[in-house]
Image 1 (cartoon, rainbow, N blue to C red):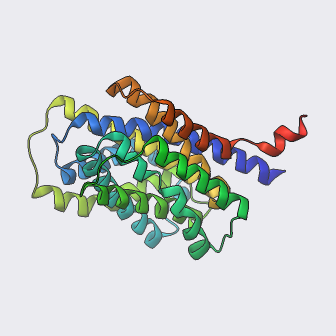
Image 2: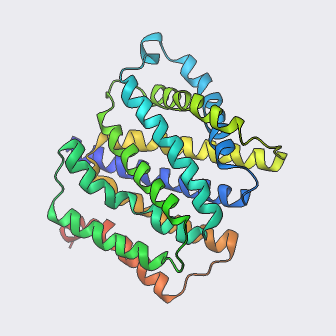
Length: 283
């Protein structure tokens, strides 16, 4: 029973986290290439450190300590690489096309969880993830091939690794501590890269970057909570819920009206997420 509760909570955290991540994609799209990727990476991480600092200072000295410095350093640079790739892909690709590739991350997490965590998903989980991935391709069907698609793939790979590695973080390490050190460790490299690509930024661009930083920070925190509570193979499907948010935001902000094929794709994604066993018990 406790494991079932943990899994339910983890799925809930991922759904809310993906809502925030989808909103972050929208803010990056609205930047419309006005800020260089390196400058964006540095400012986003700097704002994240500033936002977390007051919360980190309030926890005890013992809780502030970093238990896994090398793992945190690795995850920090995954965030850096992923954010840069994400900005490039969203800037040069339609939002739907970029997100179609982003949502390869949950699929990549299945083999990664086997290799890195020795977690073996059931055959049913593999089939369900495959069906959901087909739904992703149907709804957000890439209609063009572009060099920026490689950057979108880079985002998917780094996101999958970032979430998988959360399972290796010490459970006694708080989310605030994890987020603070992850953001802080990414600053030196980000600052160095941004120096050579610095340009003036308008107030509007500052606001979009700050919003993106806050939203991704919330996603990262919820992802840590989720993947520390349940095996990746059991909850990775919940990452696909962000697809629904992206479609809705596409209608709202960019006038992308879903057609019949899109609706069919959404059904393919939602079906594997339904608690079929629970439904059967209620009959």
